[in-house]
Length: 490
Image 1 (tube, rainbow, N blue to C red):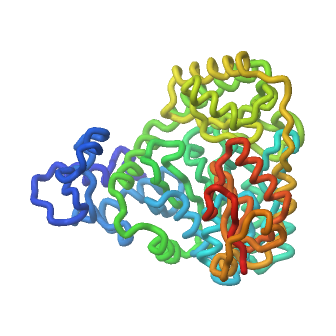
Image 2 (image 1 turned 135 degrees about the vertical axis):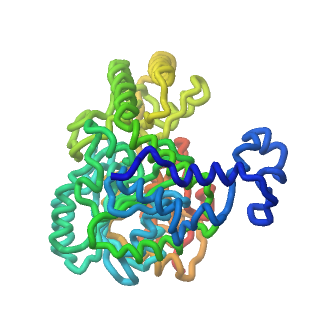
Image 3 (image 1 turned 45 degrees about the vertical axis):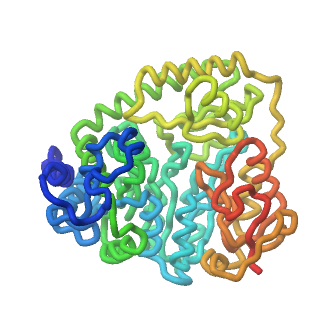
């Protein structure tokens, strides 16, 4: 057992920040002495003293032999991994590296159609061929959940030459599928199970939370420590266990997608967040769950609102095994409002900001940083929303996710890499139906692509995206941010 009280990287950074010396190395602001005054006014000057580079005492992220190696070993033990890598380019680079380390050009990988855009980037970089599975779908709530063990088994029977299976656990709504069963099926083919666990870094620290991906049998998982724990934005971790994945390939892949000038502020925040959870995680998560349950109970009693619940939800197929209770999804369509409208009202009128809005829902992340006052403000704001802004009805004419997924799920005519690098042309939307898309197009958040390079563009998908935009959603990924044109393969 390692001493989880230790923070080797944080301690080394603190010592070097305090050491008097003449700096003739990057960054150019020289420990804050050259920083602009407006930025210093916002952040203070102390933080810049710790904005250092790969000094002798601070180790090297790509060849860790000192304090970074020690910090990563501590993290591996705390999160239940055999080896851990610190990530400074977010979970995005971890997902990309996972695909690069397990798949080459032309190799098949099985994954859900509702993956994050980082997985599509991994397909483009690696040249892998996706075998997409449609997730379980709740038609009442219009929420896509997780892929099922049966779907994975069927896909592997049809594609026994697949090199890996990748799944999302939990989804952006906090939904967790049967990962243990998926791991068992995947391992029967002696291939690795990769998990996008970006929103599940807290699972290892409380028994009332869903089973962590590694404990469920995953070979590799990527976690955004900054999303739900106490690290700085962009700070994440990649964990592996077992021998199905070559550690050297992971290290080499990360060198392709991580910065060669990593921020030690981000790295040290990972060290500190690990120590915090290793020492106090259960207490912090107990408090977080208490706040979340208080919010869920009170909000579910507000007329016109309903809350996504564990095992079965609010009608229709449950489509999931467990729900992260710290993730709160509130259905607002019963107020005659879209999620986008409700999000804007809450933000502008009541100073409450959700994690993301969708057509019928608002989703809130309740984490160790939230307070009792936050929960009171959230409940009161939703109470006021229901009283003051309720309309008689809401007519949603958009095609639901199920239509979009079914339409696009098997319409890949080129590999994402081939289409991304193909000669393309930009056309008005009206002229793109039945053409092959050459860029990633997704409402953000949550960053789930509705179109990707290589897929055939259809009118239902174009209508869906246009209505998302008309209702206040943001379309990202495409070159034309106004979404009047699209790039297609020429």
